[in-house]
Length: 83
Image (cartoon, rainbow, N blue to C red; front, side):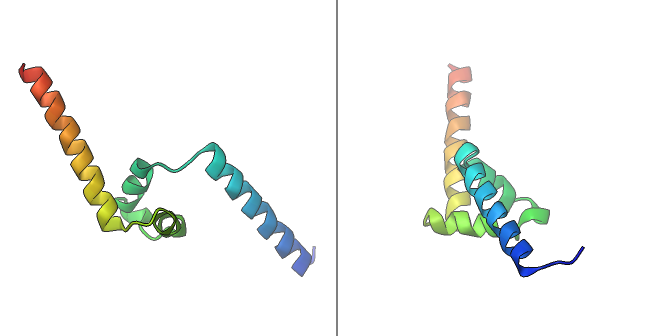
């Protein structure tokens, strides 16, 4: 079977539509992006950089925010257990 430019365009359009629908049905949460950043085999995914730009943040800021959030959550759990 011969490859033609129309096939490339069709495939690109299908990927675009599928990706748009995926983002609608399965939104990326900060926890997903944070886990992806911390996974060495996934650190170069374009979707992470796109998400960071879209959400006006950086990897460093996101990690700092998530650490602060979850450390506070752990402190609240510790305080509850201690009381």
